[in-house]
Amino acid sequence: MQDGNQNTYLVEVNDPKSADIVGKMMVWGMVCVGILAILIKLYGTVIGWYHASVAWLTEAGQYAASFWPF
Image (tube, rainbow, N blue to C red; front, side, top):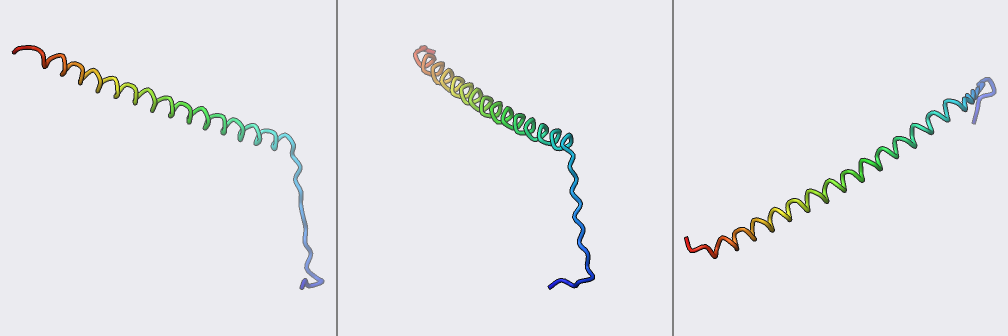
């Protein structure tokens, strides 16, 4: 229940230029986060391939070295 003496004021600020700038900043932020996620995934894939290749080459070298008589 409101008192009859209490006044309520509503001030609306309409600044389309500011809203446009904030919208563009949000879009560019999401684009940057997406690019960063792709780079992280790509880095993980390349590192995984590198470790698998090094492990394979190490095992292949040990297998080839097992045939040497000395």
